[in-house]
Length: 87
Image (cartoon, rainbow, N blue to C red; front, side, top):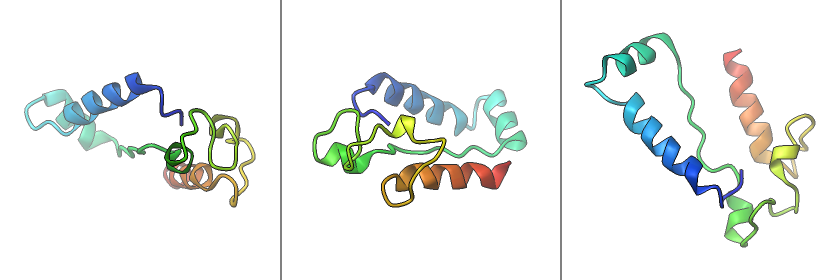
């Protein structure tokens, strides 16, 4: 959600490299057992206008997961929909 948290980008890069590996037996087994849904940056509208912690509407998207508004927090609604498909 917060574009300034670059450490998360490095961690995700390492995770994607590992989980898509064809040489690590653990990665192969994990792919057999689980469906991984990797979500890219979820605040592109805020980032494009230079917001560090908030979306274009001025909301901190981390605080909108309980009751997101489809118009103001479309990425949060999309994430919740994606996750609920699995559960």
